[in-house]
Image (tube, rainbow, N blue to C red; front, side, top):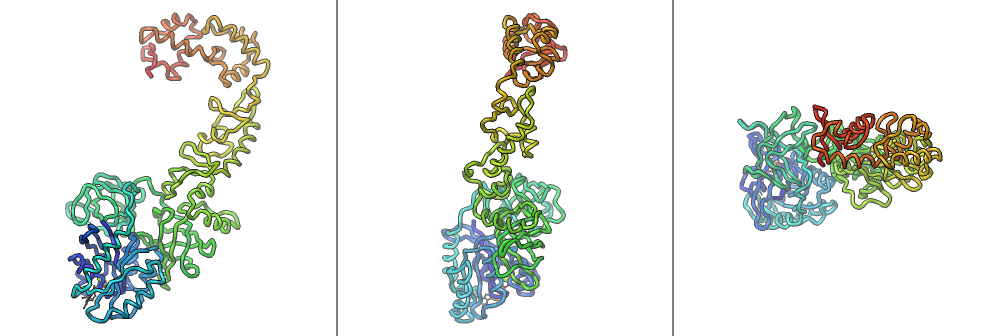
Length: 580
Ligand SMILES: Nc1nc2c(ncn2[C@@H]2O[C@H](COP(=O)(O)OP(=O)(O)OP(=O)(O)O)[C@@H](O)[C@H]2O)c(=O)[nH]1
Ligand SMILES: [Mg+2]
């Protein structure tokens, strides 16, 4: 399916043309018929040979309904621009054209209608001249009559050609539907409609409105119930759940946890001069009051009255309702850091210049950031820039990495203690202010290394001479019987006090089972081999016999094995070797 919006001055024949193309009336309201003009958005569809189904969002042309018009064209990439043959170039034709241009709409068909009333040549030339000054320059044109049907075949061909040029959206894309209509259906509850630009929605899916999760109870497209629909499509969703009270046109319905909701956004402005301090931001079907802080001639920070799910590359427009002036907006960063220091705005402007079109710069500008957060912001990180490090969903820029490596050297050196060698990863992460300790190993470079959750300097490798001698003595004692832990007296004789034992334990050279009960690390493997030969579950006495050791050693040894998940202690104090 394809979806096209209409645009053009009031009374120029948009709705009549949509009716001629689709056979249904986009003006549904009694008031619209009575007043002979469109007030709300209208939705009709038809099937075009070679193009499949094409739906139209018919917009009102009256100057009072510009906001509604913007909600209609906002989510759509293509337009049917309608001009009357029997009228001069009119203000809302100009306003609509400027809005389409600002929103970045580049594809459309120009239809000069009411050609049964007057020669369409002059109107076509006037419109062509205007259109060619915009992003829609060169758009194909047809002359038609909504009343007699003249030129309709050519218009259908032009529309078929138009939709053939529209890109096919990704069916796996994250869903964002700007609601354009909300109504209640007796027996079904609340139904909302909108355009699904990309992605897939299924009955039973959960979609979010703000922080609220809603379930898709029913789904319709083009008036038919379906179980699944892929964008682009017009959709009507029957929603179940606690509906927010402010659910209305402009509300965004989105895939849960896939979108960042922006209240501050840095943008590129297109248009003449700077917008006023408080214009209205129109994006999708939403219209939100914003505060503009200029950062450079054509860059600004917008602060939104309401959070919206915005992504890098989104096109929007700013409108000053007083002067009716418009500015195009291109989102560069939907989640900028606050500007604190003086002169920060100028520095930020430079950064934004570099960020536009460069996903890698989003990492550079932030220093570190979660990959999943960038995905929420719509930043598609390609291959990482040289020197960028990645761990546990975090990316750290090459520049930040270099600084962190210098500081890591300082931290590890400062915290160095010869009797407690190595600095725990958590302590390093804390001192560096890192968001995750998982990043530390990637920051460690020679002469540092990571072992057993600690960062060591190469100098730490050699144990102090006294400790090395004590360890040699201990090894000799345990050679014959790995479970004959030396007594407290023997440890003293070997020159091992509490600090010495703790240092060897941290360095992974011995296992400390209790205050003065120590074994060599490979005793654990030997213990497991012997315990496996026992009938399971086994008692403490069984274990003592199998290890040929005393309760002084066996009880803390079994507790140590329990703590490491190697054995499992039952209610009756019997144990089983863990299955793994
Ligand atoms: N003779 C003739 N009249 C037309 C033609 N198209 C529209 N009209 C008439 O022009 C008037 C306005 O037509 P609409 O289709 O409602 O115009 P619109 O652009 O939808 O107007 P808004 O939605 O209010 O902006 C109606 O009275 C139509 O009958 C046409 O091709 N020929
Ligand atoms: Mg109309």
